[in-house]
Amino acid sequence: MAGHTVYTLSEVSRHKSKNDCWLVIDGRVLNVTKFLEEHPGGEEVLLESAGKDATKEFNDIGHSKSAQNLLLKYQIGVLQGHTLKNNEQVGSTEEPKKKEMSAFVIKDDLTPKYTAVVEFAAPLLVAGSYFCYRYLTPSS
Image (cartoon, helix red, strand yellow):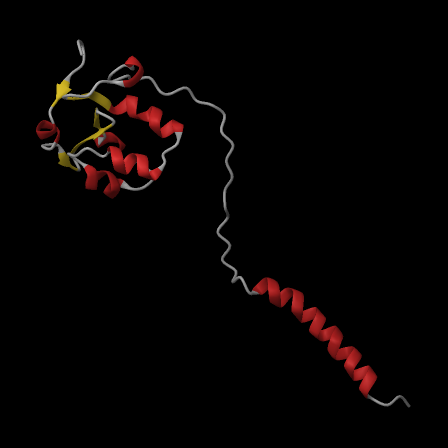
């Protein structure tokens, strides 16, 4: 592990505040202090795992490839006893290669869901009422 800063879990456990937040994922020691406010799940999620090995939680969520690549940006070292997969760099500050990603936005529709039924049923009710009236009233 030449060239890699090696930390013990007890060293990592001393960094579990909002101003100094470290955690371990897949043997990588990450300083995510600057990422707290940017985390899509909120900073509370990261603070719950601060100072601990959060590998299980990270993998259970099913993070995207982009999120997995972001680990390199915040990596400051390796956990004692772990080896890195694929001989990846420690503490790489390069942004992960950006691929075109398609996305869509779900618009918050504030109208109640039953309005579609009402918009469909109201004209039918009016038309049905008219035909019933014409059928049931005697013609002069």
